[in-house]
Length: 84
Image (cartoon, rainbow, N blue to C red):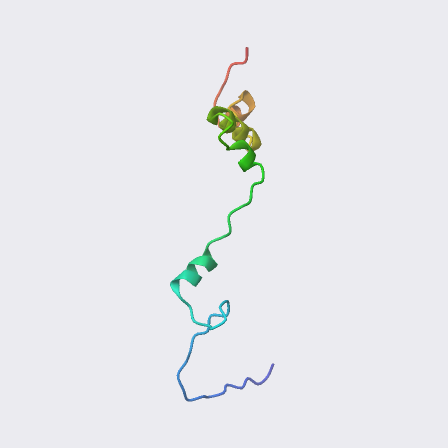
């Protein structure tokens, strides 16, 4: 590219927010743009309901995320355990 043309326009500059139809930015739109949609976890409603005891729900949740404190998981965190 050898030449660049800069047009001069005498007038007021306007900022345009392309995500919104009118092009005007407000706080709500900026917040929604910056936040991410929550994950939809299909099994969560089945585990966390009134018919399952919270202790069982917590155990199920820990199993799904591999957070059960067994020897293998604790050793990866730096704990030294003596096996039976």
